Image (tube, rainbow, N blue to C red):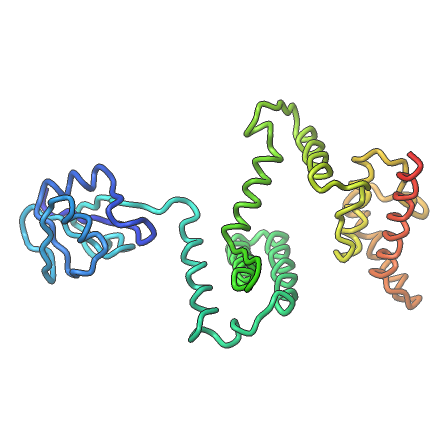
Length: 300
């Protein structure tokens, strides 16, 4: 057997080892360089002797690597994986880091933050993530998604510290998990879905029923950027079948994505020349559209 390295994850409870790990532990002498190694107690409890030495001796030896060590320092040894992380395990590390930052003796800046003070960073990180997607830079996207995830962890930690009705990241994760299962009966139930369109329509219907919404435009955040707001409103109204058409464009309607972009750019430039804020003008148009939709729904 010679030298066998037992690799374990610091995120898995000590003693929860693979069958291969237990076979190796029972087949050779077991050594470790630290009595405080988390696997020492459960291995000894299983009736296996563990000796503490500064380095692996010769012969048939099982060496308990420090948790998280992959054995790269022993290139000629055989590595046995005793425990490994499940997908998402590193999220526990992120939660632990946030706990350290917000706890006494942590970071003064982090300790002062509130949901409201962090709102600007949530918006900024969202736009930076969108920019990484548009630039097709995978490294940037991974980094920006991490920054965005930090905002979720941070807000959940703030809510966890409340004196009344606290909730944390586990409740956030449980909520979205329940929603995904509930909104995908074609995956987790016995409902049939023949196309992506069917899935989308069912999602919107279930959302309206769960939220008890009376209007097709209820729940659309009016504070979002005006172009996104207008597109979302039209999408919602078309899905609901409410007979309120969007305002017609002047002249020939653009057909390609490039023509749409150029038309929007030209309108923004024309608005600026006339002292009009195009973002606010489109937001006002969206609100007029919302009012027209609700008026049409009231007569149905």
